[in-house]
Figure (cartoon, rainbow, N blue to C red):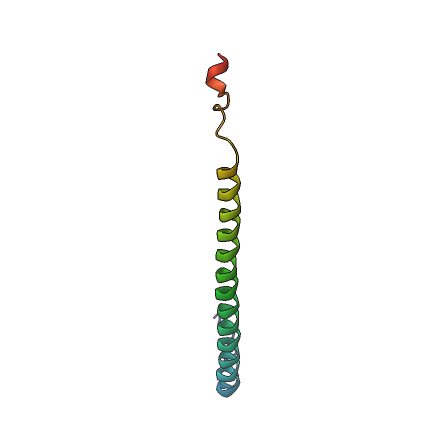
Length: 73
């Protein structure tokens, strides 16, 4: 008869596994805070670019509209 090989236990030491999970929790929290700060600064950069382009658009004269591809037919 065929016997299935005995599988080693998934977790050797429960205390080590718990400590490892606690360490991963700290890493996740740190990464999350870093991403939140990056998103805040990204929003400020986009707002600044928008303001600059809006100012540029207001200062340029509103000339005639450009030629569209459909106008060339």
